[in-house]
Image (cartoon, rainbow, N blue to C red; front, side, top):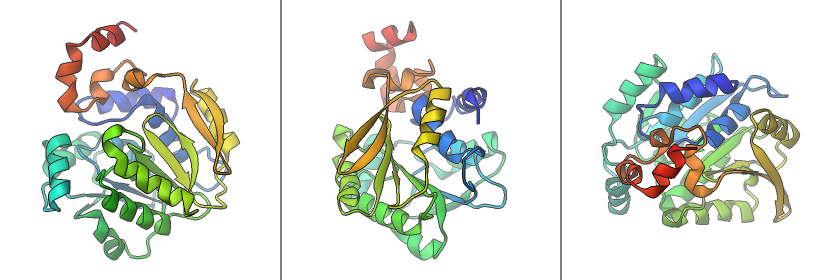
Length: 274
């Protein structure tokens, strides 16, 4: 997917509430693109879809013959703490709205599993995936289970896990689970953006050189970090406050609950004039 296609993706999804930055849309397309130096076929999985903004991005990069699975509880039952989080951050979570968005943009639906993600192991069995996007619950006990399942079902050589909200103040459970998996050696950090961390299995063949050449093609600056014995690519060039303004479509990427507040703020007026 070239830069024009990424712009069209944002145009196609501008009415879908959700959170996808230009940085991460680009990184997804680099990892999922047909110009990879290795076979890019394999199933896709997304845990936590909200209204489907990132789901569309995955669906646009689906390889013919491969499966695309998504999991969300939508308006189903969950535990009390998770229900409180949904009410505070994901008002309007609706399977009907999600399906309408998918049909409207992709013209088709992924395989939908309306359940808690802990049931995926039993539902999907031995299926493996080349790309798994985790953006579900922010509670530690849910996230660690999602990561352990993702690690076990990830294709060894080319599989990639994208984890959202790995460093936000209100998502410390995500950070705890991610770093636990890294420190114990089950997963290795490959790249980080302001919003997501990208993880691979030990001995993965995913190439950093190919990745950084593509970042440069899309004019995204990067640096190489080294920690815990791993070399990690970190994108740079945008401050947190401007993260979702990279493509000049700030309103389309922000959490709906914040949009009206930011539109009236000094920050919105400043970013709008970029």
